[in-house]
Length: 332
Image (cartoon, rainbow, N blue to C red; front, side, top):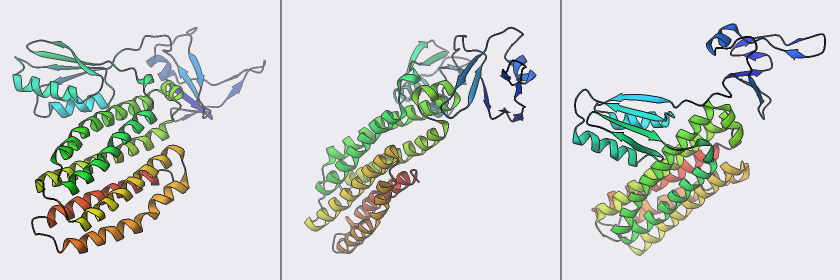
């Protein structure tokens, strides 16, 4: 596939020429034609993108071949599977010289369960074949991002409540929901990378490669908010049911409410490109600083067993706000 835009072809400059009858034409590089098996008389497909580029596709009528990756059993097999999934591989073959051990199979199955659309389609004593059954064109990046945000927003609300009330079950549910958030994050990264490599898919979904970069950053920031919630939940569980004083409860609830307002406006500003909303997120910093200082002041009168966990928890809540600011900054 080749881009033609303003006479630029894969880094080469070519003059636009005109026949006596008025037809404009540009010669394609010989190396590219040979690489793609083109000969005189072959047909190519021309598509005009929304930003004025001309895409020349030499294989428009060819069946799309699956991308296949082969992995050997090693200490980082789980991470390697995730890496190939994120890079858009359709089939991942895992092979061993001898028999694949039970613990390795457990790692593979655990990793597969964390990746949406990836399934084990073949399994023998020495090989496991994974296949991604997703059709990228059926997944809008904005829809995936909103879905992940909805999960993370619920985690933010519940984790503060679990911390101030000592509700261990609620804290555990926050940790469990982070797994689903991670699954959506991995899916979105895969879809975005696929879009960048496929101009037609970019046109179909109405998202440019530059926008894909912004979505990638936004997805990472939202996933980071989920991670901060997990850290607060861990502190709630470490307190093992110990409750905060009434004044501290109110202050933590206030801090959580500001954080929720911040990331809600940040996401809305990112999706709508509303600079005013983005600035509103930054303007919340004064409230965040004041509430944080009040918590530190009141915490001095609490037990020594409580203070470290409390200050750590509110620091993680503050990280949620900072990530919200970063998300809003993508608008600018």
